[in-house]
Amino acid sequence: MRTATLGWTAVLTGGLTLITTFLPEIINIAKAFFNGKDAVNAMVNNLRNLNEVMKVSNKDAASEVTRLQVLYKSATDVNNAHQNRIKSVKELQKEFPAYFKGIKDEDVLNDNAKKNFEELTKSIFENAKAKAALIKTFICFS
Image (cartoon, rainbow, N blue to C red; front, side):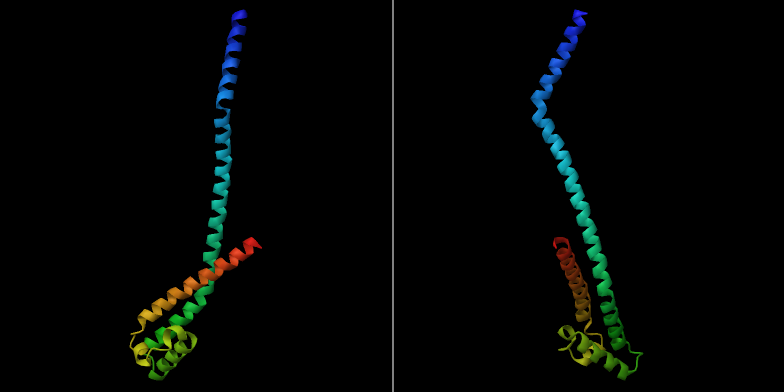
């Protein structure tokens, strides 16, 4: 019986020594686990926010890009009446002056303004993303 008691005493003493020796490391591991959990939760929230921003921005940009595409296609479609094509060019220049105002009507009609069209399309999406992100940031911090 005395041997059994000594055995348990040795195990308990050894266990307590190990725990005491490695307690700081055990605490650090536990902290890292909880900090890691917080980091993962933060990352999940950030991804949700990003997804929401992308969804809102695409929705906002869709109508403007669709309008741009309709006007540009109408202006460059050789099967469309010349008067309608000119009217579409004028609408493009009126609605998107930063990209089409300084371009000759003939260049748009002949599809020589394709670069401007593509840059404007990209710009519309980027602008919508920036606006959506700004709004989301404002909502999150207010």
